[in-house]
Image (cartoon, rainbow, N blue to C red; front, side):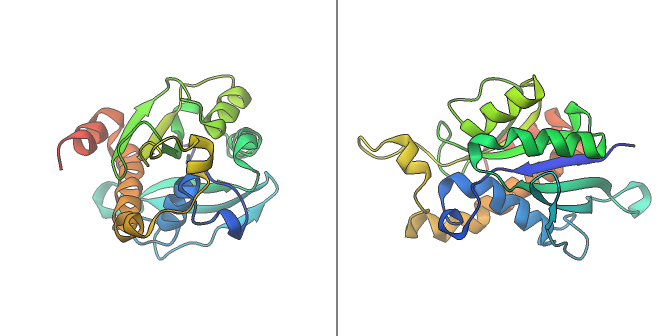
Length: 204
């Protein structure tokens, strides 16, 4: 059976590592590190792949009878955000991943900071990473873990806001947000979209 492909979006390089725009990449790195119950067993290292991405082949969740979980490829594109589609399409071809097994984790301006929401398809909301992926795949019908970062304060340009590091106050709760988003991706793999939505969209 084909693996799942779980992609965390961000920009490459240390200067972007703490940006709000890189929260998707942070979530995938958290999954790879095996910090979740049901995350990558024993931890996995993201390694360079010819598809212009860092990837790790892992087992996520728990299989029937407590056996190994579901096959998955965790990936962070090595390109800038607006070129994410090329690596994602290449990884899908390399591992023969069907569209319904693609999960993209990304920052979302239109969701309150710290909230996590799940959906399949829909628009890109001006997100250049999603726009690039949809164009490369010829479809918007893939699963998304949307990590809320809220709207910028005052008249700040949203493009500048997403490229700023999380504030000191945000960093206090960021580990919990990243953990929630990683759990949400795991729930998509194990439970499916509707059950995962019921779990993560309910008041918490």
